Amino acid sequence: MRRYSAMFLPLAILFFASCSGNSEDSSNEDRSESLNETTLSFQDELKKSVLFDEEKLLKQSLQSGKPMLLYFTGYSCVNCRRIEDMTLSDPDIMDYIDRHFITAALYVDDRTKLPSNFKAHKKLKAANGNNGTMVLETYGDYHYSIERSKFERSSQPYFVILNGDQELLIDADYRDSDIEDFKKFLKRGVIYYNSN
Image 1: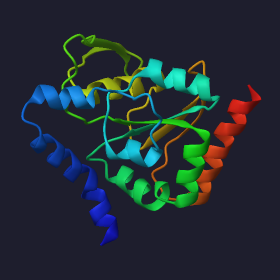
Image 2: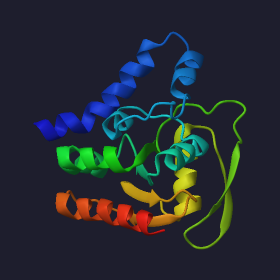
Image 3: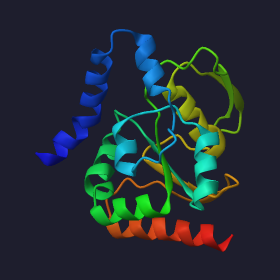
């Protein structure tokens, strides 16, 4: 029973958050805070979707001397709920992530409208090598465009560890819930970061 309740928790949070505000503008304003000045725990990152702010995350990474861990996820992603329930909820993994990384959870299916001043188009390279343009209207569109344009991936869950120059150190497409393999992935990312 625990597995199913954890799977629907992000949907319930999204539903109640959308019902609680009186206007769409205040809801978008609250959610578009991006990464705030204080560093959230990774568990807190999983509970809310914010507009990814590369500059703030990079600044936090450089100031702290920690690599960036990006987690591409989705509210409707069953494999994401599985890894959150079986792997990311492990206390040792959560502690290791919080101590060694600056994190961001990027929901690719978040339907919150982007601020009106946000750039509306993004060039993407398709899997077949053709170039195209995607109209960005929502947070999810923007997050998905980052995954596609920077990492040429379009599946979730997807994890990337980046250094302070935003260079990919290591990535993982973990659809299983093997805790030991995920710990090795995280530790390799820290080792690669410290060897630069």
